Image (cartoon, rainbow, N blue to C red; front, top):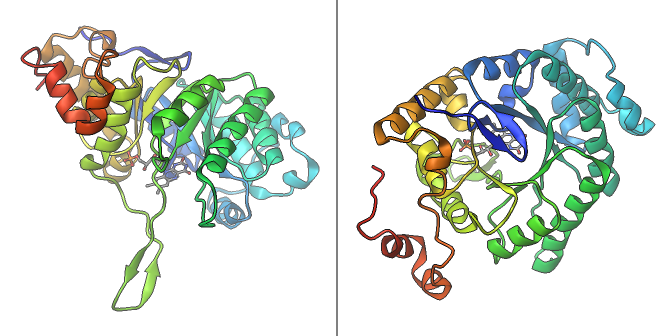
Amino acid sequence: MTELATSYMGLALRNPLVASPSPLSYTLDGVRRLAAGGVGAIVLYSLFEEQLRKQQAHTTELVDGPAESFPEALDYVPAVMKEDPGPRRYLNLLERAVASVDVPVIASLNGITAEGWTDYARAMQGAGAAAIELNIYYLPADPRTHGRDVEQRHIEVLQRVKEAVGVPVAVKLSPYFSSIGEIALSLDEAGADALVLFNRFLQPDIDPEELLILPEVTLSNPADGRLPRAWIALLRGRISASLAATTGVDVAADVARYLLAGADVVMTTSALLRHGPGYAGELIDGLSAWMARKGFGSLDQLRGMLSVPADTDQAAYARAGYVTAMRAANAGSYDPW
Ligand SMILES: Cc1cc2nc3c(=O)[nH]c(=O)nc-3n(C[C@H](O)[C@H](O)[C@H](O)COP(=O)(O)O)c2cc1C
């Protein structure tokens, strides 16, 4: 018997697989399908503060039909924001999702103004969100932007939201920092309940024949998981925030890889978009089968087994990287595959 129950920033989860934000959670039916598929928690798609989302919300509303009720959570939102159909629809969906599924529903927020971050976060808490994930999707497009300012912005956003709500707050980070470790430690000290590694930015391509920019969102590949996995392995045991892995889960072995590196939970979007929400059940069954085959009875027995040990020579690690350091640390001891 394998036990998959786990905890993520204090939330009790039936298993460590979490549906990360995507169009799969745009509707109540989508949320229900994700829960029925077997995930341990659901992070709703991100509420974007800016105008951009308005059009999208409007389009979705046309598909969904009008909101059925005005959630009480809207009491927290200033009048001007209530006119925006994006937040209204989001909070309505959140409230109904929380009432409809038996797994924690985490709200995701992308703000641009101080008020946007705090007022919406408060409203999400009011609508029943089990936790809030801050999707700090910020591209310093001005080439004169200082790295320190970008980091400080992350810390301030987190601090403001932590002051505004009592539910756990996760920060979804991009990998584009000079020192990921330092920003992770700073966010941990500033009160982050979880770090989600890493956000994937929309990276438009160029069509040389049509001479056009292609704003396409591409789905991930398993190899894309190597970067977040290396950082999770390094941060494991060095911060008190929970660690969530996002990017590159295709098969159950990818979930196992992240857990061995030290992730508390493993998120998935591309695989569920490719195969449907029911594929979560296959990932979970595959994880159970692998644990049974390897003799692991619970996640505690394997989580972080291949993280970077605390006594690792940091200088050697910095020079040679994860692979060499791990080879030395685990020489002859254990081969999980
Ligand atoms: C179509 C699409 C929409 C997404 N929308 C959001 C979003 O609203 N907020 C967010 O934080 N991440 C969003 N993501 C990112 C995913 O949540 C996830 O972090 C990323 O796709 C990497 O995980 P994966 O390799 O399992 O796909 C989106 C991804 C895709 C493909």
